Length: 567
Image (cartoon, rainbow, N blue to C red; front, side, top):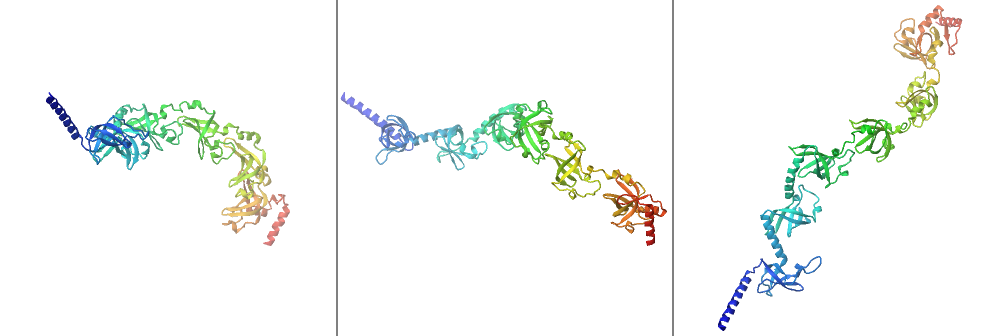
């Protein structure tokens, strides 16, 4: 009986020994095995892996960096990597971290083989791209971050994405990822759905993808469309960024779609009605309106009456009297102004506005205040080639044209008679309210001497005339201050002459006979020949001296007799 019990014990011992030897032989270096925590010491964790010796793991592998607490308990089973089966003290060297990483590598290898996606957090920026934590460190090239290369890679740090493994080398510990591959795949799927919706007039939702000076590119889902700046709003936009920002979701209308090149033109303002519809009823001619100055140009200011409707106040419509060189002298961008609708053209989308019309036109009052014929007194404000401007009232000048300065004087330039600041008297000749012109005359202060000339110098009158100018066809001679007559070459001498200078010279005074007077044309015809012929026949009517008094006939004969004796 005792012998049998001994045999049974021996068999059990042999079985246990065989099991121990089998388990001991199953523990290999650089392989993962299952172990149980048997003790937690100050620097080490002791783990039983079924080997003849316990294993040691650095306690730092179990310390929570945030709480600084040991994250393992005695009796807890864990997977460990056998780095060495025995050290100098006969203990196994184990690693929990390396076991975890090895398991991760095995999972990643499996996912790579099955073409599965991996998820990770972008942890930092490195040369050429980004570093991603997928349990182990992986590299995400900059070209694989988005569909298009992006310069600002820092904005992705800390974000979690799914990636496709495009390169896997476990031996070198090298993993390269791509996010663009996923985006391209998603985009192709979305594109198929979006293409079915790209019908002109359809309203779609999109996300602003990029903003330029001329517009914004909107992602409609797999395909981009261009929203031009002119189609963003009915109102004025200086830059697309003033209305939209990247990442913003907006509603857009399909304006045009070309299936061949997949170009899409989008509109945002077209979703709402065109404000010019019915504008003629809202802004009739003569209506008083208020608006905000949105732009200044050399010739006027644009005023926004409502979003999408702007009117132009021309510089000439800003003041009745002021001569405005630039609209900035009157208004500034942002000002609210009151004005009057002068004209509206809905088809051309133009409205003409006026500011000065908000006040009475001072030019209409001028007609009542200064009727034609009124004598005014003012100072010369400006002297030009064609006349002088005389100040009438604040901002209103009257023009005395050079032809209205004198009845008789030959004036080459008004500055010969007047200078700026001179006080002058003038007569109101005409007021043109529509063209804002005030015409004055100075010569009209005195009677026109030409009107009485026919009475004072009837044909046959003998006058002394001073030769002023010689021409090929005769000589001009002055009979009184500012009044000249023409002595035709045929009337200079009794005999035929070819050159007036053969008989007369400028500065000489000659007795002449008045042949004709035309006050309308302001022409007087004189004759030396006629005077000589008539004096020879004793048929002279009268002779006008400086006082225009008659000369006795006997005196004339004496003069003639004296001339003959001298000859």
